[in-house]
Image 1: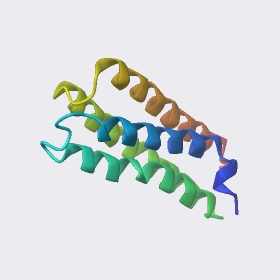
Image 2: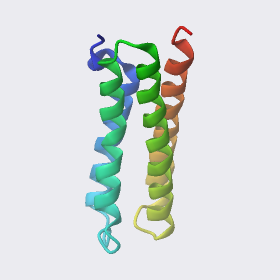
Image 3: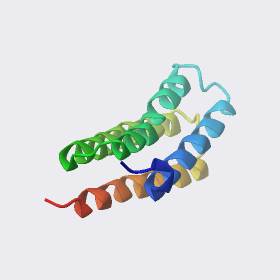
Length: 117
């Protein structure tokens, strides 16, 4: 069993979750479509899946959690795009958040590649 706090991807995902939460809570009208709540609820699933992966002893289960985290990352990326297009998130904040999210997904992919087959 691994300690998720030692996983760099988890640290990045956790920081991303905090950044999005702070950004969306200060966005005027962010609750117009319930988008901020939906986004915050879903994005916390990324670090949770990464943490859960650390509790898996079987490589296939570990990889499954990583795949789920990547998939959730894609869903969150769309929610960020929607929030941006609805002008609920400024372009500069959107670009930073999107870049950080892509990095988290790449890290999850890297971990998957490192799993012995």
